[in-house]
Length: 173
Image (cartoon, rainbow, N blue to C red):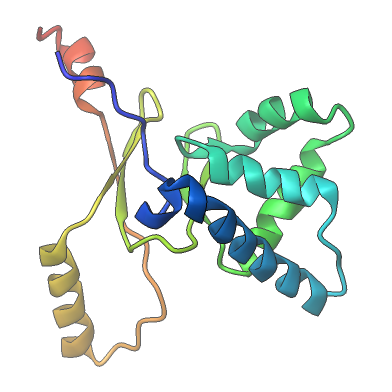
């Protein structure tokens, strides 16, 4: 039986080395601090902890999941602080929203220093599988060129059932 893998690998390869992690962390914090400064805001302890929570995550996290994790570290942190900080992190391009689920909640991933990728999202268990497809990117680029469209960004999400949930539903071993 294969070892269970984490849902995602959030760190760029170089940041997985302890000696490079602090440098990576500092560069991310600096980008966030510069963005906050342009908005007349400061990098507070709570904002820093929210960013660290996302950087340490081994899966995509929703606001409630972050709240549960962070509440143990700082009982004064609130959901509104997490929500507002996520919005600030999205504005400066460090964090991206992934999927909107049946309950209306979204999950988030650290986007900084990661290659472009897309997502398959299980509507049963909420598992998010990341994938890259050069062929799909090529088709998109051809369509954009053919239509004279100026693309600014894109997000590709496929909603369905993961292999485990499909097996449960059909009863297939």
